[in-house]
Length: 539
Image 1 (spheres, rainbow, N blue to C red):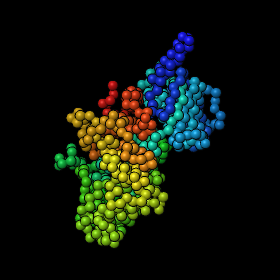
Image 2 (cartoon, rainbow, N blue to C red):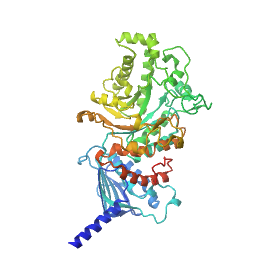
Image 3 (cartoon, helix red, strand yellow):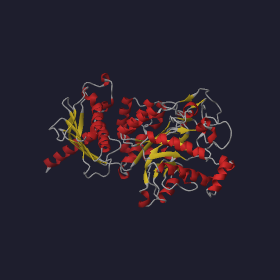
């Protein structure tokens, strides 16, 4: 009996020792770490079962290049070698929880990743990546210790996401970021199994997407003559022109890049408010005969699209080009922070209210949003709007992005509308994350990594049936005070890593102390990748 006990004790100890080497974020649903390891040798083969997995296999090959500075043989095959292999296998008839689920089996002979879809295969690769030594992130051979052992603990992982929608947002209108940074942003997202990138492309402070039918959007709306220094109200400006836009070819390039990483890009074209930049280019779309300007400060502006036929024609033409570029089912149309003063004073707006039998300007906004929704619906698309689109009546098929707390999301879910939770108090990554006097300038607020980790996207007020309408959640990155990619990374990471586990891992499995320990290993990966993360939670 004592011999059996000692044997079991040794087995458990060995398993714990290996388990300590596995630090996957987001934490898998089921993970059993065994006693052993698979060693990557120069004889490694990468095989895939279906043509659609070829890009994933090549992605894995590129990732593993640093292990022995080799391009490993990559081939389509129906059978698995006896050893020294990583096999990617599609199994549409397998018993997977959902389309993004995967299994990852590591033995001493090889690795098998199996899933019903190529997305599941990709997420399995990301988990495998985190099972490898952190040096897998290195691209400079001189910085990899010669004695690095390229081994993976033997394990069985069965995994799937909790939520369908796992999003990060980036505002490129307040400050413009080049294509290479946007790609880097997408790469970091994909490592933590995010699948939606909300690209905020138009604002009062700049229009960032080329629309060929309206060249003044590039010539005028994409540029402002100055930028506010400090917080709103300082009245200090840098007098430095700022701007830029993405050409349609660049948009296509980024969309394809994201798709290879199983991230869908959701573009946002703001309406009817936050339209100062567009009105500066095409003032005839406003309610007043006046000169409009691309905003150089932050805040909410009274300038708004006038609900005239010329405006709807303009927006439909813009959306036609947007839909050509973005295959996403969702198009985000904003709908937030739209003051009604100009509509209340405009004879044109009042005529529309009377003609359509509307009660007031709030119902006029509902009419405006519903009209745009119908147009997108005829093209097979759906709208997302910020929770203000509830005011005056919700468009019939709209998905609500709840940002002013959870109230709007709760109301929409009770109406059986899909909801994405983005409450400002926990999910806004432009907030301070430590004592204000010790931090770079931010818009305000206070949200720590732990706050993000403790966030629960499904409000307790919802019944089980109503809770089904919560598609997931998103972290929002507004860039009034983010002038560079380095500042964006500082504000987003590691908070976005905490949110990734909220959106993937079952709520009952979340454990802050364990997450904190896994995060320490992730910090080493981020160091190697050169990510300018906030160090507050690094030991």
